[in-house]
Every structure is written in C-alpha cells, then in structure tokens.
Image (tube, rainbow, N blue to C red):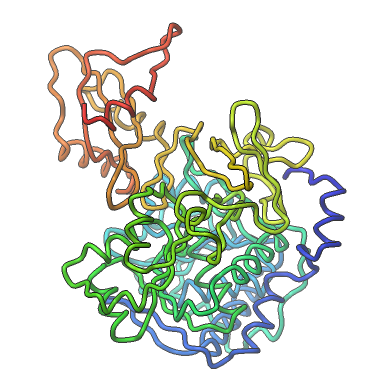
Length: 520
C-alpha cells in the first residue's frame, strides 16, 4: 500500500474527515437507528421483501457461521452475486467480522473471476449458482477454503455449502475489532491494463465517501431504486451503506429493464436519481414512458461515463434538475456540482472540488487528486508506485480544464479506456482477444459514441492476406469462448489496409476516434 503523508493524516483527522469507526461500527449504529426500514429486491428469479432488521439478522448469523469456520478480521471474503438480499448479507457480515470484502461484478466471465480469486486468495467465496448467462464454475474456487452457493444445494457440488448452511443459529452479537486505517474493501475495476485492477479502500476512506455522498444528495430525492450492480463501487455504496446511514428504504433491481423500472416507479413510488446517463435516457426513450414518470425523476446526478451536453440539456428541458460528478473507483468523489449550483455549472461542467479534496492539473492537463476518500493503492504494488507520488497525489489519467470559478470539465483521457454504461473496458484486453482470430493481423480498439451507454468498443482490424473481415456474430462467438464479459465485446468492426501511425510505428488512436466521430 502507498504511504500517506503524515501531514495529510493529521489534517483529515483534525477536520473530521477520518474517524476511528470501522464499517462494522457505522453499520451497527445505522441499523439500530432504523431497524424497520424496508429492504426489497425486485427480481423475476429471486424476489425478497423484509426490513433492515431481517437482513441484519441474516448477516449476523452468516458472520457467526463464518467465524465458526475460522474467518475473522483481516481475512478476505469475496462474493459474486446480483443485487439480491444475500449480497447485502455477505457485505454486512464481512464488515461485522472486520474482514476485507471483495465484491465481484455479477456479469464478469470466467477469465476475470479466475484472475480476481487468484489475486486476492480469499478465505471465503460466495456466488450465485446461476443467473442469466452466469453459471457457477466450481473449479475456479478449488483452493478457497469456504465456498457458499446461493440458489444451489451442497449435494450438487461436494465441499461447497448452500448459503443457508453457512448460517449459525446464534448471531454474532457485535462487530469484531478491526483497524480503521486498514483494508476494508477491494474493488476490482477494468482499466488500461489487461486484467482488472484491485483497488484497496480502508474503513476510513470508505466511511468518508459514504458520509460525503449521503450529505451531498438532495434531501427530497425520494425513495431510490438501485439497479447499478453491487459489484461496482457506486452500486455497493448506494445499496448497502448510504441508506443505512440515512435510515432510508432499500429497493434493488437485479437487471436493468427500462419497462420494468417504469412500472416499479409507478407501482411503488420509486425514484431514479441518475448514475451513468444510460440509466436515465433509456427510461425517457421507452415506449411506456409518460409525463407522469417525471414526478419520480426530480434529480439526475450523472457520472461514471461520458456525459454529453445534449443529454444534460434534454433532461433540464424536461424539468429534471441535473448535476454532474467526477470520480473513479480509486478516488470516488473528486468533484461535483451541487444540486443548488447555477444551471450552466451543473449542465456543462463536472463540478468543483468536494470537501477535503484537492486537485490540480499538470503541464499536460492531466488531473492529479488527493483527499480523504482516496484509496490506499492497488493490490499490485507496481501499479501503486506508478499512480501515486510521495506527496499523496494520484494520477487520474484524465485530462481536464478549469474555468475561472474553479469548476472542472473533463475533456479527454490519457488512459486507453472505454467507459460503457459506467463499466470500464480495457482496449488492450479487447485487442489481444481479437488477435487470436485467424483473420486478424493487427487490431486497434477505441471508444465510439453511444447514444444509450455513452461509449462502446469499436474495433479497427488489419487483416491477414487472403482473409475476409469476420462478421460481428463470429467475433461475439469468439469472445464468448474466451470467457470475456459481454460488455467488452466489440459492437462495430472496421477494416483498414493500415493504421495511421507515429514515426515510431505507434497507432494514432486519436485519428481513429476522429474518423468514427465524423462517420468515416
């Protein structure tokens, strides 16, 4: 982990950004304050309805059951589950144990899951037996001591327990002691590297982020529906931490189906408050959308993907109060426009520095940031050494400009990342998979504008002599065999005789992006 400068530690503690609380402490107080708050899962395959008290009871039984199996503070608990009650129980149980929790996005394929489990070597792994295209693969966790399965019976998989079999009859009465400065969460995110990056957050950084977001949200935002995957950082915080801090009901959806979401908004009075632009625009564009649904869309806090001005102005024209935010898994909340800020700032910039956060631009315009919610580093020490300096600054890889009022606007990314609906996709990983096709001599993958998702992967291919451009169906079948998540599959193909290059032979990807932007 990186060394945090002593003066920053003193400042964050003196200003109250960091406390001595663990995530287990935060949850215990919040759950005790609102035990009857509703907790509901809207799912076609695993619906559930109850209260915070019910979920907490399951989480404490799970914590006790894992402790009986030798799991304790500083052990690692990984889970790959959709937005189900059991995901909350695993997350809360891990916090009560003082364990390091590792959420894995439920649509990650065999390759990503295998890499993550090999990287963190968890003591516990809890997964869904089956969900959509996801199917449990027992060989991936052969070396994990404790494996639990939601929706499956242990008899089908020797050595693997059903979820209920992991629950003790006697709940864990109180959180186990843990070091608030130590790791609490490892969140994996795909980026410029071929494999997912493990981002390590402490109890202090995660606790500050939770309190900061809860304080920034509009007080009249209504009962929110969380459909962002809880394997993602922001989905996890919005589903499992902020509502507990606020005593607000939890409503989860395990798939994003715009028609179904519109129905839930009407039937249960649920609100959708933003995220990646796709979550909002897909509702507006659906055939079932009516002006009545706008009552459940008072605010749209947009981030996690490119936010086109055309989207923000469209939403504002419908009476939705739009504000933008900028951050990453590494540094979750760097800037944001407050919901009360002037409209031009909210619509056309990514906001100003949040409390406790500092950022600056280097000579190339790259954004460097530091603050009390900045992670401890990566599981890979080489990545940590490259991304952080001795003064605590994190190199974001993003390019931005500042206006005269200190508002930041993101203009470009140094990193070769495609952000599709809030999910980071490594162009390098997609390119390497394409190169395994017999027809492909060279591949370059860039971000293409996407009206629904912000961006998607576009592949430029130089073919081997005598070969034809493969069809999209052939490419999709190849990626499925390779075990990559569907979100990473190219969504358009372009044949080139050669690439635009620098004198050293490097492909000039900015020219490929420009060609796509002008429709060439």
